[in-house]
Length: 249
Image (cartoon, rainbow, N blue to C red; front, side, top):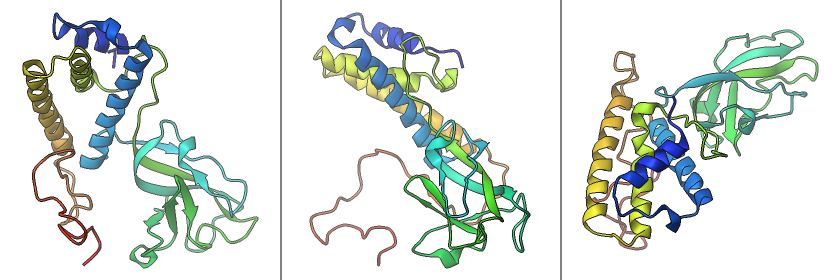
């Protein structure tokens, strides 16, 4: 990755000769670029969290009743896909060994996972009951977390983006749209910017979805790759209208 925020800004400005960069504050430009970059990673996390997938060790908790903060991971996670036992205080106890998968369960349906289990709650990993250690001198102290990351917020216009260079225009086009709106050019220019951006976004979606095509998967995908932000379809027509929310009959 070598594209800087300044290069994205320059490209967005050059997309139309009428652009006037003075109409938008440089600090706001930086905030927009950081937001759009994070949006790309969130989209990839929904479609295929392995595309940008990373793994890292959690912090070491000081007590068997402590939790592991997801905010302490670098980079921070967009979607957690797997957790494993990495280290213990004391010695491994019955039923748990280093390298074992920790079942990520919902507090609503914990029995859908097998022990040892943990919950994802409040941006923390929380051991379920005493399955990650009931003894103050003998418990799981550290985890390995596999996840799809989020880039850190940008701090300077000269900073290099996290996104791969070939997808940097997924940040450029939305910024160019902002410049067009600020210049009050709301018709033809916005239309072609939107069409070009949607085409690039479709290419990105295809790349993300076919990335691990040869990997064996469960017969039913856990999170269907639905279009993000797409229009169309039936809308809720008021209380009781439309489709029921997920998990409700």
